[in-house]
Length: 337
Image (cartoon, rainbow, N blue to C red):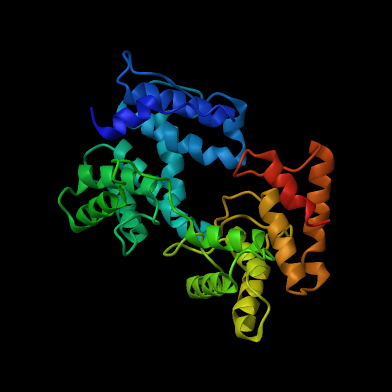
């Protein structure tokens, strides 16, 4: 048994939310080699919510690829058709790099072994999505499925070797992998939360500010980590963390312009640039705060503030779509009042 298998068998099942509980129950049984092959159950209504629908697609495709039975969701044929449609529309939809890689890789794992125009398009998307590091969007999960697809279709290729090298480098001394480090987002968050702490040396904040400046992308936004596309949440967090000095003015203005460009037609914000992502309360709250701090015209954020207030009244509080931690969302939303 490998170190990875031992860790999975000893890990505690997540029970804070029904979606990860169902997914992990299936994954643990699958890794454990349970017989018969465990059934993946995605019939719960939560899997149809916008924030979880892509995860349903991912794990459904993975289950079909390994021959596991499934309950709920579209058939294998319908799923393949939906994935192919999204691959073809990837540029117009501005899919995140790792999302495009996941779609292409899973489609290639489901496809018949005979090359077609569709598998050629999927392989092209996989090549486009590969980063200089050899990863797919600096995302270990997407890189694993990308590596599996490349092993099936182009074993021994340069793309395969680079992806494998990335995963070997990312493995911890214990033989495990982390989801993904988020050094830019974490640095901005800590700078903001520790602001005014007299026990910390000012030079620490100066070094952190220099790091954040270097991390800014050409589009004016900031990525959650280097090497990936900008996102609304990290950009807003960095704008709140950087000091408003003359040295920072150009970076702050570019970041503000990025946020204003990323507004949806409803004048809200998605976490990512991808059109598939829904607006999320905590992300919208951060964008409002950042634009306020940048002295942006109130018309640029007032509709979003009204949306946030309406959501809180309707649901009896604030939610964070990407973290099932109500205290976090409430803490973020309260600052916008």
